[in-house]
Image (cartoon, rainbow, N blue to C red; front, side, top):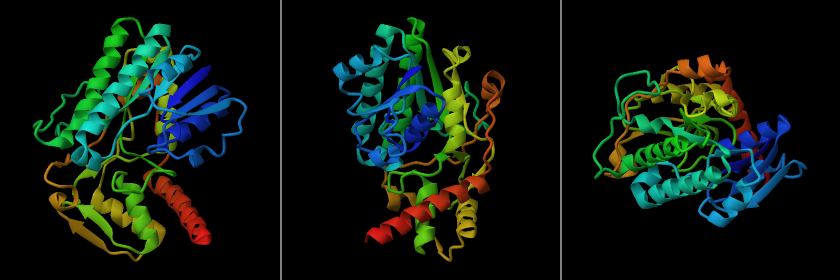
Length: 327
């Protein structure tokens, strides 16, 4: 197939591009490099079946030109990061909703299959666990900007299914805390890369709140495998959780990363308000029910948290050594 991957120079996107090429697809990567890094695609930039285009999903003419020749689109381009929701909610809303509308409209003109990557954030603070695809969404007030990302992604999903009603083959996947090599260690990135970077540098691992909040961390290799499986028409017009149904507290995660990395770093705690401002509210627990993905796609996560963390730590160690060498 000829496939477009938006956001293909990002953490998950670059892994997705590599796997699609290994499966002998022809791939076009579209990324504006606002979050992604072209270096993540170094292993495949010279692949004759791969084309990299620096551009944005907000460029409608460019999208139309690309998509008209494609068999499928994996739409990963997004504005994300919990800190962004507090600091620049308008950027989060516009970056997600406008871009997704453009992708869907361009795909609809050609009836090009779209796999849209959503997030477990859409479930909000629902306390009925595990989350299944039809679980209710429970969000905080609109005056709390933390919820703008969940709302924007949910609106994206609504648009996906609205275009689906008009005849567009579309599948929505909801990711649960993907981690692995290339995950970004910044204020806007996930907790795993931030903890690993701190542990390897001997700096304190900073936990927001009391650390008893739980998450389900899915190794990127499993996330990508589940995503590619959604090319199957059997899941057209469906939404699927892609994750691992095992929970761990953030406290336990920090200790595990310290142990695997051999770090002597301390663990410190900061109140949410001090770290992220008054506009932030956390979700206490997040774990998926993946029965639907198992039944329709035979999806089963293969990489344990211990193995995935070790592989991720190994990658970060190499990055630190290379940076020190260049320094």
